[in-house]
Length: 164
Image 1 (cartoon, rainbow, N blue to C red):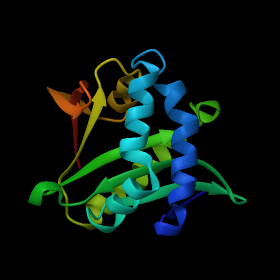
Image 2 (image 1 turned 45 degrees about the horizontal axis):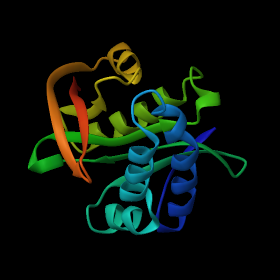
Image 3 (image 1 turned 60 degrees about the horizontal axis):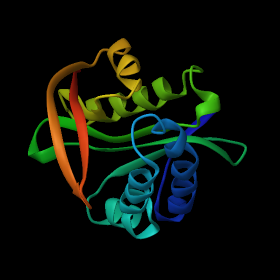
Image 4 (image 1 turned 90 degrees about the horizontal axis):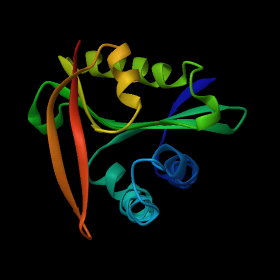
């Protein structure tokens, strides 16, 4: 399995993966209406195009034989700091525990180091079992954050950090 750098032509692949992953990943955390709202907000083709083109988010895809198993999005030098912000990291549920998330994270770390960034940061829902994954690979919780995303919905997150 290889990691490829996604471009605008891959937006539909990322969208399809998110539509498969999100309802399962968040079924015990968010109600279906909020899941649908957030999928549209973050994974519509227009939103993905904006993230890549305007916000300069870099996307990676896990690919093997033209099949896709997960994706990540990140931004080096986030907020003009020597940090890489991981915006997204998702693997199809049937492939959890096979090292694919770690493979994506290792590539992000490599790119962050190449850009002379000193740390990785990310937000994760406070009730998401992925917290254990992040802690196992060296992240620590540094604070809590509540983000109003509109439509009376909130993202109730931990902010996690890993020094490089």
